Image 1 (cartoon, rainbow, N blue to C red):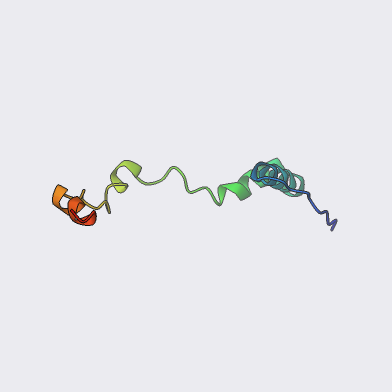
Image 2: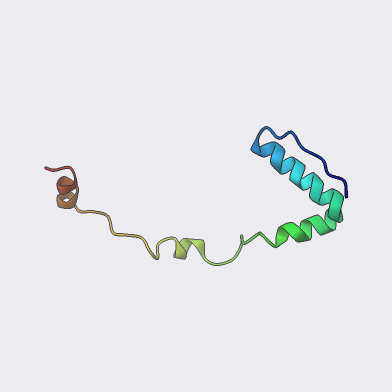
Length: 69
């Protein structure tokens, strides 16, 4: 196993170097299959779920109390 130290400056470089390392180690197909394990996008109903635990808007009276009026 070859060990190399990467001089990483920002997140984009980390991503680019990580993808390159995966592709080199696993090949394109293997890298894609590996990354698919972490992709949770595309399931569920975001529109319905985003309102499930939503708190009601505060009333004018509650807002005035928050600001001591």
